[in-house]
Image (cartoon, rainbow, N blue to C red):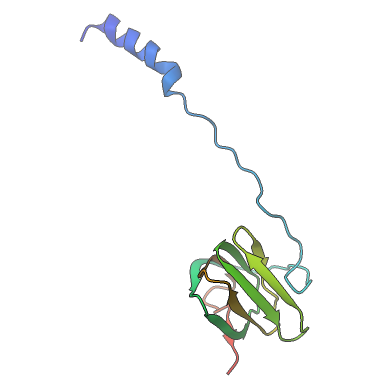
Length: 135
């Protein structure tokens, strides 16, 4: 290919090759857990774990607690979360960010006829399991 043709093709492709800039906007900003506690982070080194939780229709999550912050983004479905310490309940649905109570027993159950799919982020000291199940 001749150099003039290469330059002409490069100039013609220039504007078309430009990519739009990425745009980031907050989906949710929260300062408290579902039970109204302030969100505090562990001191020292932290391991961040990203996981997926799927609860089938008619399913439930048995009583448990989290010693450290747990953030759950609900991708699909609806979930009723009951705090067994305060007696309060909250329903979260697709598009919601739920921040679980810290060190308080709670349980959850699917509401409706759609499974619940959540993307979950835990922040805890390295090697620490952030879910304590009640026997």
